[in-house]
Amino acid sequence: MVSNETSLSLWPCLHSIRFIIWSLPCTLCRLGGIIILFISIVCLTFNIRFLHFQRCQNSLIISLFVASLLVIMISVPGVLAQLFTCHRHCINIYCRIEGFISYLSGCLCMLIFTLLSIHRYLSLCSYDHFLSYRCSTFISWFLSLIFTFPLIFDYLNSYLPEGLGFHCSINWKDQSNLGRLYIFLSFIFMYLLPLIILLFVNIRVHLMVRNIYSQQYLNSSFSTYAYHRYSIKLNGQTDDYGKMYVNKYCVRKANDRKRFRMDYRFLRGIVLLVSSYLISWTPYAIIAILQLSDIKFIFQHAVLITLSAFIAKLSVVLAPFVYLSIMNYKLFKKILFK
Image 1 (tube, rainbow, N blue to C red):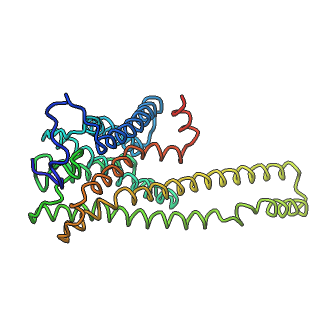
Image 2 (image 1 turned 180 degrees about the horizontal axis):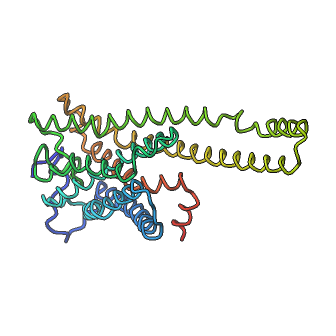
Image 3 (image 1 turned 90 degrees about the vertical axis):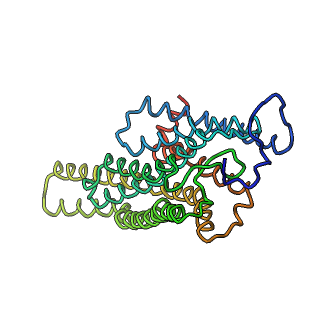
């Protein structure tokens, strides 16, 4: 099988597991497999509990959990089997499926983060009726499938083993004009453009939240209350009217503070998710740039490529876990410790 691997002899294909190897690299692989297994079990349990017990109406959030489940149930088992046996599987059909699921889930997470930010921005602008969550979900799945599904049939590019050979991804070494064009478009539409939109939208949201809920506005309740009480006395209005005004005023201020906390929590969550987005997918973006520039340095270091893939897939697995822990900590704690 043609591959992106740098050393095919480092990890032989799995033909028999009668002999268990205990060399240092294999021991490290098994240690990594134990860590991945623990994380996967926790996230799998958490995702199933959320989808089973919580009737979430936001289809984008549901898609985020589905993407995590796809990686855990399809990509992780094959990787664990190879790590614990210290052999590559060398099965072409599985490599295509695993590469497709991993790349599809990664693209979904990128687009979902972007669309969630756009929805929050439209909500603050009172234009949220212009774009529904169902429409956004369709857009994210449609674009992700366009960029990932044709590669199963070796159209535009293909899925091949990369790095140490334990995982599969697109063929970064494809020198054809069509293959180089695909890598370029993937870099633009699945990394650079979503990143620009994320930064622009969230900076705008941050500025809007600061302007709408300034500290002076949120802490002006006492002075405003005293002024209106004095006006009521001057006008000779009844105490019942004054009490009714104060009640309405307090309710409005409480709602304003509640919405401010929600918007601030969303901003904090998006900042963390954008940071993880950069950390997780920038290495793959660098690989794409190096390939388009005909720089082969990265392909001489299989461990770096495998580490990039591990971080990217781990971010997909943990995305709903991290998102819910920030956006709704009470629900997160309820599901996790149920």
